[in-house]
Image (tube, rainbow, N blue to C red; front, side, top):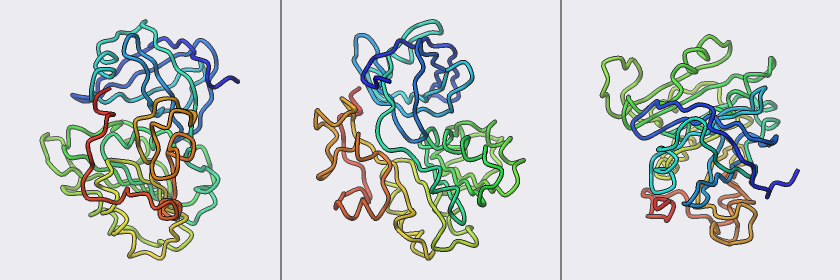
Length: 283
């Protein structure tokens, strides 16, 4: 399979679960392959390309879903597109989440913030296909109760054995909200039976990273078992343009999923309180 080849993909369905997010179901003209946590380059005429992480498994007809957050020109163009329109896709690229690592651990904890649930949803779908998996805990937070994604999925997942779900909203702007009022880090304190062989997978806005890591220090967890999904404005996806350099690594090929031990090894400045302005907001 030529991962650099741009494959036309028809927009099969569009869902609008939030004010700024749309879920696109794409049906490529040729088969594509990717694993949870990897990203695809999606091209939209005339704006160019941008990286998006699939938020669903590949379905029987070859289609899959991506979540598109409205942040700039390219995503604005995507939001104006309709079913039947065509985009280009190539990939998948980068290092994703390790299913083997998760299944062989003593417990799996998934921590998502905002639209960071999108790639983790795909990961959860894969994990739930294993009958013999360790206990799974999902912690999901958003700044407003109305901004949660995939709530129907959470209702189904609640029926699964050996699975706990904690939802936290910083601001309640809907009467239907029944979850916790606060941050995801509040939910981390509810974790039980966490040992050094447990695995953690985190995806969300970078400002949440240092708070999550600080909370995880209360557990005897090996830093090799804590994984964060990092972000840069990917341009080529194959490590040639240098646009996604973070320290001495190219995030498109060495990431985007990295363990805390690797983050510290490469001296990557990702555990900071604020997120600097990046050109990704100008897509």
